[in-house]
Image (cartoon, rainbow, N blue to C red; front, side, top):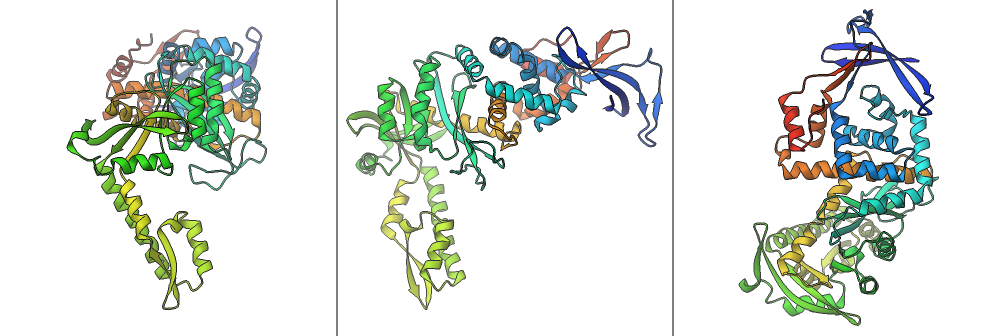
Length: 511
């Protein structure tokens, strides 16, 4: 038994919370008894008549809203099917993550002020046990994925990309040292997400050891697509996944793809050289989202296969990239002069740690006893000539503007990763064993589905002009569920702004 305080407007209400065992649901529950108001100046609790005062007043509008979103997506029914015994707890934790942007252990306290829509008991210990349980039930996670994917368009464009989650824990076997995308000097896991262009929703995910490079993940990705019965799809990927082997795997699996190609490939280099002089001609110009671009369609032979090749030039982007590149070169020239380094080995060590590509652009020479940098003009000019350009390969032919437009939509998956890390408290792994980690990643996946759907509607209805997702949820929190001692309850009045939010999301008002 413990006391809990809830502030409503300028009043502080005090409750006595007692845990008990629900024999019907066979789960622990909580009972809240209203004690009285607290004097904010003296801390004195002013006891009042229970017949006239509410037993319980809790935030309701936010969880009502999230529950309706989950039902409309089909998320609720699919979770019921895959996790029939704990689906309520999974949804409650997901509602907390979307609503609060806080560490999961605070969910228990959140339920102290929020209407517990599924009557779940979620202490910190219970949450850890649930995550561990989910992590052990990989078959149920796959069952969920199969059912969730059935709702996708059967001709969907799918983005695939990886991000890193860092961890201090030494007990998670999958965490390893690798390329950390958040520039943190910590071991990590790699998290691969597939995201639908038409649905604007996450489709499925997988995890990889922290040392695995992007290019090595495609084989397993295609196996998962096959197992989950994803057909007639087109995968859209950045150049980190490019290799001749992967292109062959796409062909072998009869999977359509759109992928940017690195300029280090000899075939791609020849293609750029071929069209260098003609790329920015007026006849090759087109407009994409109010921006003038230049593009040429061709073919490229990679190994034994011939693919459609699309070469693009963005003149405005080129100006910015060239300026940033030259500024970087000048910056290191000046740094080296200021340091007055005598030994070549010391300068090499400094450059290796701070500017990995320095050997392509500089030689180290001696001048007046000190080491300085001398530019390799040929390589610098070659790099400048590549700025603002991109080459995209595909095994399907589309209009030149469509291919680039599809590829540029991949920033949706980057936004999704940003939401997981910064809006759903997922940036740093605060878990200490493999199975609990797997459970937490699944929960993050459920949460980001909800968040992505809200985000989609916010953009469609242009709601971001005046609000954010968090301000909308904070506004809806003001709708309280008030329960009296006689088991009757009321909802507080719904404001015009709250009605407008429900209308924008096509959700009937709570009654």
